[in-house]
Image 1 (cartoon, rainbow, N blue to C red):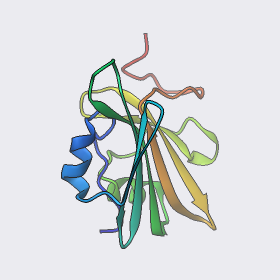
Image 2 (cartoon, rainbow, N blue to C red):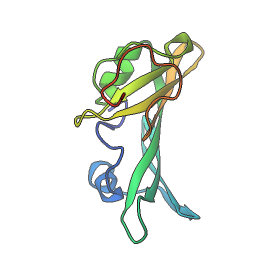
Image 3 (cartoon, rainbow, N blue to C red):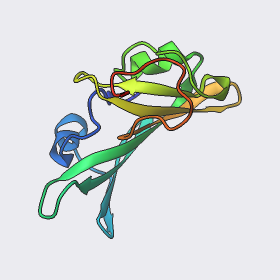
Length: 140
């Protein structure tokens, strides 16, 4: 596997990450945030989780997947991550995109390019805040 499947991970309880990725390589807390790292031979996945209410379960708020070999194209990277096909880009150089989950909620996706290859992707549990040109379901 070249990348972890992160489809619909945002907003899920941390237990979902353990079910998907198995044993955690690192687990630490900083204030209300819980930071987890999962590793495989070809990728590393870092998660930030925090409860949405006092006493609630820690929910995945962001993730960053780093790839050993990288990917040549955005569709190739998204397929490897188990994500839907790309929506039109709203950022510069096609590195920032809306990320829609199965429930229709819109999150943010940022791709990191190094030496001409996509080496990492990050998902955030908030809608894009950078001039999205296409109407999104969360828009009023």
